Structures are given as structure tokens and as C-alpha cells.
Image 1 (cartoon, rainbow, N blue to C red):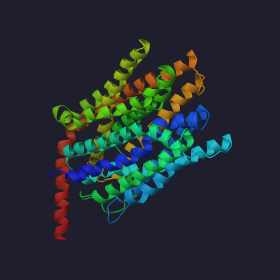
Image 2: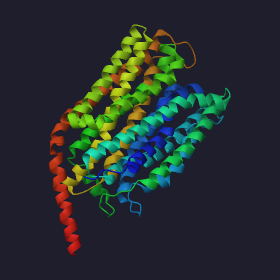
Image 3: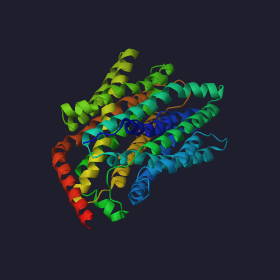
Image 4: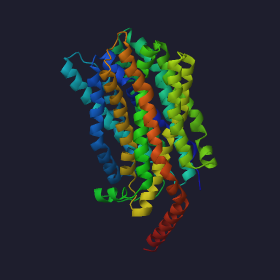
Length: 453
């Protein structure tokens, strides 16, 4: 099987970098921006995050159906990089704009801009996943391309965490509102450029169903699709855990450890996940994909226990070790579903004859990411509100307990639950060689029939 060119592999990483220049800021810093910079009540901020996810319950399937109906000279997935990069960048800026209006108007403005930005992110990020099934049929190459994608994602996260707060301070000259707005303008320019690079260099070479699929046909690809159902359940829980952890990190380090200076360093440790992602193709050759996936999730849960040990013993070094271990393990747990989703597209075609890459990846990846992000931001906000968190003051014992619960134990439980459905993937993994052989045979027969006509 011919492997993708290096240009294709590198270009597959660029939209992840571009997406993270906006989405990473939202995932890591938006909750604290809403409460401590823009002055929204913590419960209202959490509700905004969840409201956006309720919208995603509708927009993700709609985007998926739109993608399956797309027919252009550039393919089904690729043109959306061109069409959506500028609107997405603009609303990324507007999400961090802070008009001086009343409290109710602030909440309404924040909700509207974030929801639109979130909808556009679904629209531009889903093709990054769906195009994988069109770049190659080879399962090993898909894992390699996913590895490059994850490198791009982590590079974007690292860039944001190393530069964001410094740029906010530098460009804002002490005014955080102005600093965030100007910083997002800089990031937005990078976002547009990187998506245009992906549009130019990626090409959907795998022969796909050229007709516009009906809604009923797209939904048929979901029926009985075990790999997709497993990926959906595990991914949703994974993103709840991952986002809850990073969204509460600023509160955790500032109020619980009294080390606000460590926030950027702690979040930058996400780069260590490249260590496990780099070896992902090797791990999948040594053992099953199921085992690699489960170990990543269980390792992420255990890392939270290490962080708790550091809090109890007042050891910053142990906390940072657990934080790094969590990112290392979560790198594998984050990357595997993207590869499995491409397999679920093949599985749906194998079982139903329908290749609905758009709908499968929109719900299985984008919806899980967005719904998990919303719940991962809303649940900790509600917990901290219940425990009487008040921003920008010294916290009492009760509010500190809420921060610890939100940042340590909520993610640990969600990671552990995410591992449960993955145990059932082995039966589908055993079917992969037969599935690919039979699909190749069908396509050869179809090509021969079309040639004779």
C-alpha cells in the first residue's frame, strides 16, 4: 500500500495547529476569562458553555449531513477549509471582545458569540477528521497521519500556552480585556493561513460515493456500527475529563497551590504527550489498538491520583509529575479515536453499502469534542458555584474543596468510565482485515463493471 507523501502528512497537521490557535484558548482559558476578566457569574459562565453544547446536539449532525451532500471539484471535505476559515477566525476574535454593557447583555453577548464560534469550529474541524478516510485506505498510514495530526494539535496547544498570557500582558499593557482581544487578532491571522495551506496541499484521492447522500442513507451507516458507537461513548467521556482538568487548572494552581506562575508551565506540559503520540504507530504494531487505547485512558485516571498525592503532601514537584503523566497518557487516548473513526466509516460501508464519512465523523468526533468540552467546562463551574467560589479573593476551605473536586476527581472518574466501552472493541478489530479485503473486492468489481459500460 502506497504511503502518503511527506507534504500530505505535514499538511494534515496544519489545520490542527490553526484550529488550536482559537479552540485551545477557549478550552484552557475561556471559563476563567468569563469569570475573572469579563466579570460574569461563575454559574452563568458554566451555563453558557453547556448551552453551546446543546446547540451542538443539532449542529453537528446537520454539518455531517451537509458534508455528505457536498459535491465540488475539490472533494467533500477539503473545500470547507477554504469556505469557513475566515468566519471561524472572526468569531474567535469576537468571543474575546468585551463590550461595556449591562450584566444581562454581557451574558447574552458572550453566549451568542461563543455559540457561533462553536458552530463554525464544528464546521471546520469535522472535515479534518472526515478527510482522513479520503486520503488513504491503509490502516497503518491512517495511524501515521493521525500521529502527524496530533503533533500539529500539540504544537498549537504549546504555542498558545507559551505565548498567550505573555502576549495578553504585553499587548494589553495591564488591561487584560484589551490584551486578550489583540492577542486573538494575531492568532486569527495564523488560523486563516494554516487552513489555506491545508486546502492547497491535501487531496481526497480515495474513490468515494460521488452522489449526494440523502439523510436516510447517511443515518443507515450508523445502524449497527459497533466501532462508531464505542468511539462515540468513549470520546464523549474523554473530552469531559480532559477539558474539566485544563479548564480548572488556573483555579487549581492559583488558589489551591498558590502558584499562579505555574499555570502556563502546567498547561504547556501538554507537549509531553508528543512522546506517546510519536510511538503510537509502534504501539499499535506491538499490541492491539484496543489495548493501547485502554492503557491511555487508565493511565490518565491514575495520573489524577498522583496529582492528589501531591496536593495532600504539599509537593509541587509531585503535582507537576502527575500533571505531566496525565498529558502523556491522554495523548494516546486522544489520538486513537480519530483513527478508529476512519475505520468506522469503512465498517459502515461494509455493513450497509453507505460511506457516510461526514455524518459519522461529525457526531463521532466534532460532537463528542464539543459536547465533552461544554460539559467539561459546565460541570466544574457548577461544582465551584455550589462550593461558594468567589473570583479574585482568598478562597475558604469549602471553595478549595470544590476546586479540588473539579480539577482532580471529576476528570479521574470520567477517564475511568471512558475506558469501559473500549474493552468491547477487540471483536471489531479482529474483523478489520476481512472487512478491507471484501471492500477492495467490491470496488474492483464496481470499477470493472463501470469500465465495461
